[in-house]
Structures are given as structure tokens and as C-alpha cells.
Length: 195
Image (tube, rainbow, N blue to C red; front, side, top):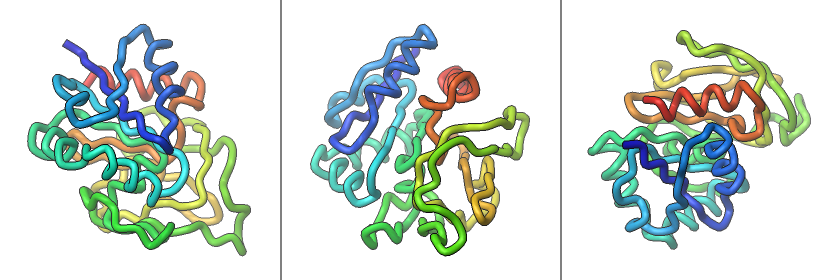
């Protein structure tokens, strides 16, 4: 049975993701505490704003220990979106923030001497597997630098090549906003929710 849990915290965009999931004809529930994650078959962590605000909110919710048990030990499929990707790494330059450290690597700011920061709008995403490449919608000033190339699921270019998505076992995460990326975003979301 599919029980989709969308983590809803102060800095997130959970309602937009909920709308996208229901548009696919699926049901989801908001998770606002560790107890709310019980029974999850899939977990989505949307994100807007800063890595620090996101980590602070997750700590205030006292949800991190339960999240790590479900994702890292029980292998529940997990999808991080935007900042939800960035906090999977060890450290973010944004606010000099220690992050979850599920993946090795760091998050750094785009070089605003080369490109306009933040990146806002559509950009091409090229996947490394049979996932269909296409254009997805971004709003980001920072991007992840994965220490292990095998974690990189997709790349984009914005003044430099950067990690657009990561994948390891049951962990999936995208820097772009699936819920704002039209049919391409819905297709990717549907694919995740079918795994």
C-alpha cells in the first residue's frame, strides 16, 4: 500500500508538492512530527529557503532520528527537492551549516561574477540513466558538489556544470522543483512514487 508522507516544516513548500501528488491521482499526508512518519511507504522532503532554516526546522520537529532510521536503515524511498537535496550532504556554505551527511560532499554558492544569482527559471537536465532528460524549473543560489561521482544522477549547466540530481539506493533528490516543472516534473514524481 502506498502511504506518501510529505514533510511539512516552516520553510518548506509542502502544499505545492501535495498539489502535484494529488494531481497524479494519489493521496498523501503531511508529516509534522516524527510520529506522523509512521507507516510511510514513500517520504518527500520539499525545500525552499536556506539550509540553516531547513535544518533548524527539522531539529525543532525532532524528526531527524526517525527520518534517518526509516531512510537509511529501513530503506523507505526518499525524495528531496531543492534544499531537500542540499541538506543531504555534509556541509553547506549557506550559513556555514552542518547538514545530514547522508551523502559525501558539500554545497557551495554559484559564482555571481559569472552568472546571475539566484538561478531562476527553466534549465536543461541531463540524466545519467534511462530517465528522460528535459527542462525543469529552478530557483537556487547554491548547488551540491558530490564527492562520489556515482551519486550523481543528473547534471545541468549554469556558468559551470553542476549536480542537478542525486541517487543512491532508495535516496533520490533533485535541485530543481518537480512540482513546478510541468509534465516533466510530474513524470519524474510519478516514477519515484512507483518505486
